[in-house]
Structures are given as C-alpha cells and as structure tokens.
Amino acid sequence: MSRAVLPNPSAARAGSALCGRRTTRRTTRCVSPGRALPLEAIADVAVSNQVLAYGSIGFFGATIAFFAYRAFGSAFIGPQASASHVLVKSRARADALKREIEEAVAGGAPLRATFARVAEKESTCPSSKKGGELGSFRRGQMVREFDDVVFTGDLNTVLGPVDTQFGSHLILITDRDADAK
Image (cartoon, rainbow, N blue to C red):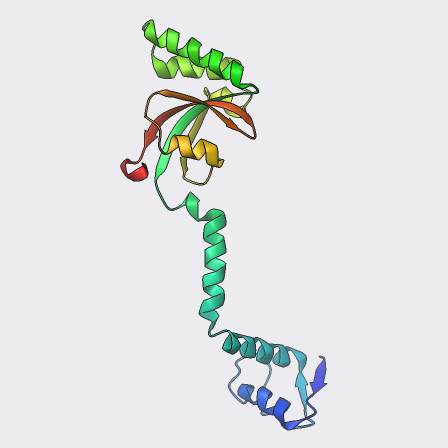
C-alpha cells in the first residue's frame, strides 16, 4: 500500500478529520506530523475539502441531474405524441406526395391507410416498413423542426413538407396529450 508522509502540522490537521471515524476495512488512527497516511485517505480529505469549498455535495448532484435531464429527461417527462411520417430527399417530391394523399382522401380513401401506403412505397426512413409509424415520443426526442410541427400542428391532417437535416417530411399526427399544445 502506498503511503505519504504529511510534513507539516497544517497537513496533519487536514488529515485529522479522519481520526477514528472512518469506516473501512483498514484501521484508522489520528495523524500527527511526520506520520505516514495512506494515499487514498489523502484523496478522501481532498474530496471532502472540495465539497466544503463548493457548498455541499448537493451542488454536484444538482449539476449531474441537470445534465442528465437535458440528455435523457425529456424521454420521461412532458407531453407525449404519436405520429407517422414520409421522408423524402426533396421538397418537390414531398409536395407531390402530399397532393397525391390529399386527392386520394378527397376521393373517399381513409387517411391513415393512404398515408401508410405512401410511406411504405416512397419513404427513405426505416420506419417505412411500419407505414411510417414512429410510435410515441416526447418533446425533445426528435429534431427541433419536426418537434415544433408535431407538438403544435393539427391532429389527423397531413402536415408539411417540413425540412430537416434528413430531408423533407410529411407528417401525420395520430395522437397527442391534451396539454402538449
């Protein structure tokens, strides 16, 4: 085991916080100047001093919680929506597909079935195998442009084209929490 020698009384006082109170497999004892102290005990004292310098461990916990929420929190908190989409490379192609869907629906075809058929046939997204169905998701899980339309647009209406980094989307919002708008 590595040991460090504390050369002066002020270093000994820093280590004295460990005096007889540490619960580990090793026996603890008070430290006096010139006496050897395990390096891990010095690290514990350094961490304790840092925690005291910044107020409390709550500061670190809050910081970690904040970044965890920013990264993953929206997956568990907030309004939820379900949507389907058709992803194509060009806006012109998205406009043509939107007209095709609207004409079929005006002729009496069911909207969701028509949208799913077009998604299976034309979409470049892997969700095309499921008729473009994306399932349920929360705000922040999709790209911003897509999110903005899904959480503010009308239900059961073909919306778009919406341009994102992936291409142009036609979006059909199938369900959304009442408090999402």
